[in-house]
Amino acid sequence: MLGSTPGWPAVLADGPVLLRPYKRGDARAWSEVRVANQAWLAPWESAPPGPWADMNSTRAYGYVYQDMKRAARRGDSMPFAVCLRENGHERLVGHLNLGNIVRRAFSSAYAGYWVDARVAGRGVIPTALALAVDHAFGAGGLHRIEVNIRPENKASRRVVEKLGFREEAYHQRYMHIDGGWRDHLGYALTSEEVAVEGGLLARWRRVRA
Image 1 (tube, rainbow, N blue to C red):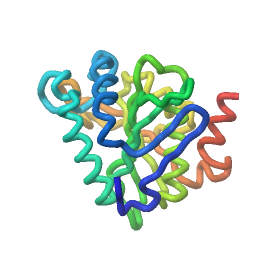
Image 2 (image 1 turned 120 degrees about the horizontal axis):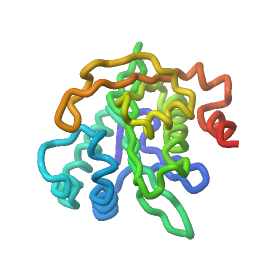
Image 3 (image 1 turned 60 degrees about the horizontal axis):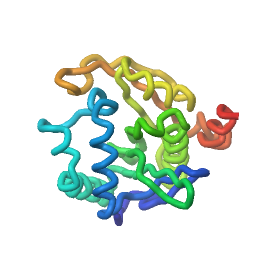
């Protein structure tokens, strides 16, 4: 993906966790992990109407890929495939997007992510989010990253709380998900908050240690 976004495209890595731009050839891997994780992901995602298998098929990936590509070219987002490198192999296990990027006086973005339940609890998404935030605050030229999560989504809330995101707000009926308008908790970080610790990845490594 070519893009006009500062710092994009980018490949980021820490240990076995790799973030990279999506490729057209990711269709089969993306579809497999999405279909396998319907019960894990569907309650938390805003999704178009239709059967999960159809909306997450290899054919659907073509439309998703083109949408991500256009958004990255406009400078609106940085969409990363989250991969795990083990035993000499790389496999797609999740997604992380820095979206709704606004420049100038705001210099902010919203982060969204998901991970394969089969690797949940191994620190993959906290590491991925820390990598992405550090990149956004550095080469990406941003000042603030926000994450909005349903209060019931304890696994996702644990990710941001481990990394030290501040809980800032309670958004009533914030987004239409799983058949209704759902409340969300708002979390945020600014570049100044992590600069004093040498970056968010450095903070995360200390937490894990």
